[in-house]
Image 1 (cartoon, helix red, strand yellow):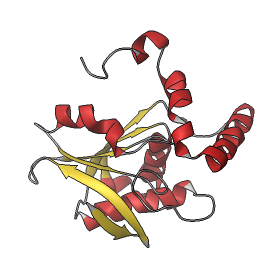
Image 2 (cartoon, rainbow, N blue to C red):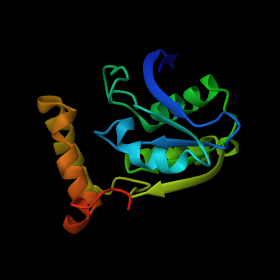
Image 3 (cartoon, rainbow, N blue to C red):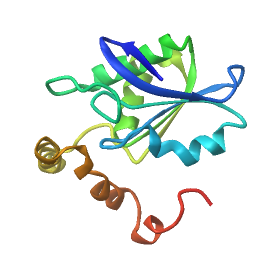
Image 4 (cartoon, helix red, strand yellow):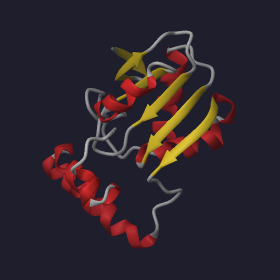
Length: 166
């Protein structure tokens, strides 16, 4: 599905019954809502699963300039408003977890809980060079250049060879 949120065309999917408690899934950098396919199938019996492509990812519009976490947070809250979700469980991975922290600080009444995975509350000085390199690579080669390196940071080699859910 698509909706105009904060002036951009946002791609999203909602799975599960409307009466189930909502959970919003926010993907990491260089991913899309499809990263949550297996988890969505596992959650649907108990939750209304909302997943989306963040600004500049997947099928969501990319705007010019750097994106701030405040902007990504406003996009997430804007989608919740569009879907008439007052409050939800929130799961964010990496970049999604950073957005979740902003939601917790700026909109604490909009979440029941924050599940923050493989994330940080800041980019430490020693990590700045890595982020600058990733940004440069994305500008030159596109987002498709990022998943392999991300998977190496998130999962041990043995776990990268297993199905996501067993």
